[in-house]
Image (cartoon, rainbow, N blue to C red; front, side):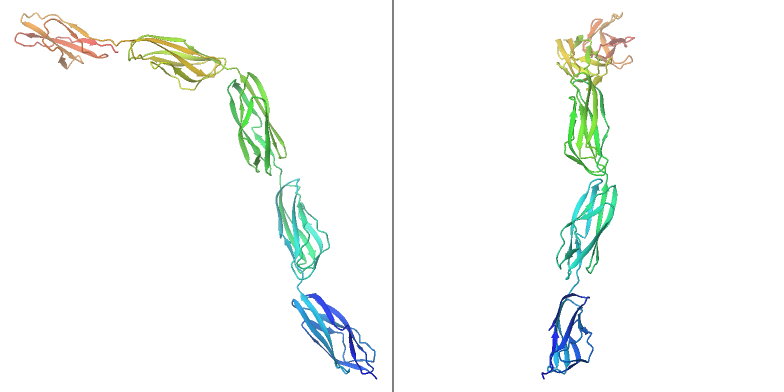
Amino acid sequence: MAPSSLSPIPAGLSFGNVQTGNNQTLAGTVTNSGGSSVTVTQAAVTGSGFTVNGLNLPLTLAPGQSSPNFNVVFAPQSAGAASGTLSLTSNASDPTLNIPLSGTGVTGGVLAANPSSLNFGNVQTGNNQTLAGTVTNSGGSSVTITQAAVTGSGFTVNGLNLPLTLAPGHSSPSFNVVFAPQSAGASSGSLSLTSNALNPTLNISLSGTGVAPGTLSANPSSLSFGNVQVSNNQTLSETVTNVGGSSVTISQDTVTGAAFGVTGLNPPVTLTSGQSITFSVTFAPSSAGSSSGNFAVASNASDPSLNIPLSGTGTAAGQFAVTPASLAFGNVVVATSTNLPAQLSATGASVTVTSANLSSSEFTLSGLSFPVTIAAGNNVQFTVAFTPQASGAASAAVSFASNASNSAVLSLSGTGTPTPIHSVSLSWTASTSSDVIGYNIYRGAGSAGPYSKINSSLNAGTTYTDNSVVDGQTYYYVSTAVNSNNQESAYSSPPQQAVIPAP
């Protein structure tokens, strides 16, 4: 009879990778392959995480008989390789049967999003923006994503094909989240991924703001230049404002109407929401008559073409005249001045006189402050002075610069004469005294004196000429009689007045 012998099926139990916190069960049996009965009396398990159940001892097996299935469970508590042994003690010829056990504890799968949140910023209503994202399994076990749900107005997801299994350390293909706001205002939401990871629900926060489209507004909405004289110009300011919620780029500006021009706007120009730009529009008519035009602004605003009507009327240039056409000053004493009036007048349209040019320094002009504008039908007064610097005839012309259609020149003439020499001739009645031998003459600035003698020696006659007078002064004269004893009489009375002409 052959001796009794136990054989395991399978010969060893390998559990592979088992997630920590989970467990895995493998079944086994033992068979009596000998010629006599075998009784298994004891079972012992070694190795961290291994246990056995379903083996009811003592267990007797007849020759060729197998045991019922029993279970070995591997429940790792930490990551890493584990090994052990299930040892069965019996009365077989080999009393101890060792069944090797092995397995590896691995950490659970963990999902992480990159980026962890998606912020779309400002997106114009009616438009959309797409941002990409991925998820990565940062754990030690495979993770299967089974569901994706999006919340929040305007958010959708595409490119995420489920179910999706990610091995440890692997990332998903990129997927897209789209924000397409239908109204202005802030929006928030979430992309929720459901899986068998340790974090079974991964939430990726979503945010964005719907903004109204950019819109351009002109202030003023049109430009009217009124009447502008031909060959002149007028400039008005225009302001364009982005009154919408998104930035607007002005790509082009176009002016129609030959008399109109624009400065200060150089496209491309980007205006943020609420931002303005101010520039100048000029009307410079080359001929009389009404003119119209248009200033068009092309942009990416909701109103891609903004039109600002332009209008103005060119008026004929005014005419002006100087009255009189000539001024004759006659004789004027050298170094003295004589003034004569004149005037400038405008007809047809207002005239602006910007300067006056005098061809001689002996003539000066006053009463005008340049530039001076003369309304049609009005006039302005001014004065011309002639101050000769030498004797002889003098002439000059005053030419005026203006925006009139004609020119006007004022002719000037005068003669400088020498400065006159003044003297005072005095005479008086002779004294009746036979003893008088001569007279003294006295002069004062007032009738009451004081008086100063002006003759250097006794005057024998009853006449005297005072050649030392000053122009523009008034003098008073008295005389005294002197006898042979050199006695002098009282002042004659009343004093005689002499007024010397001014220069």
